[in-house]
Length: 248
Image (cartoon, rainbow, N blue to C red):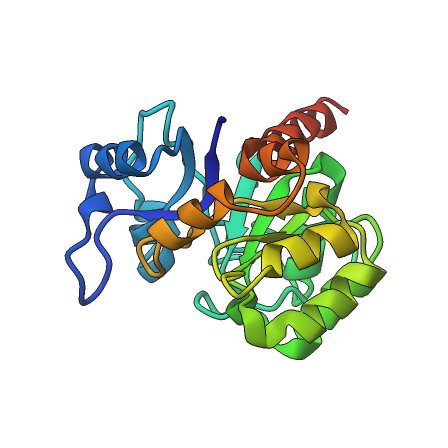
């Protein structure tokens, strides 16, 4: 079974010596856990400046750029099928502004975040956002908009299941990763209630355990076709759809 981890950090992290601090170490970890591919965000982009990220030339580790809107942000939206946003860490709001403009990631005005989301929606860019990077009001705002990109909420955790269920029930563009859905039958509950097509395998490594989600994937009480969708099929499908959105 092909397995794609959509939620992984490559590079050194504060206060810990992790095996995935370089591509060789990351590949060894993926081999150990029988993970075929990992969408990696570089730790420099998470904890430092997204513009200083070293290049990663590795087919097995497709790099996910971190995008920051505004005049001091990362500039034009990169032609990537997947991006990641850190609103709290990089001090910007996704907002609900209705200003006009060219929608570029480097535009001016205080509705930069709203314009960025509209552009991501037009391109159907897969957009990863950690649950804790948004406050409750921000999460509700994302669920109310139209023309949104496919959003994957990462690290939702068991304490957020009630709010997550409300959001997913109201908004078809929302997806969730498995990194912290580690309670008894939590992945099954989400898949059965909202569809396995909205669940993607993710570990959150090295900030959270990777062996647990990988073990859980092999023991899900779901039809084999649904497990395959969660393991890699949904990630592959969203990337293909992002490519078609770009072509438009």
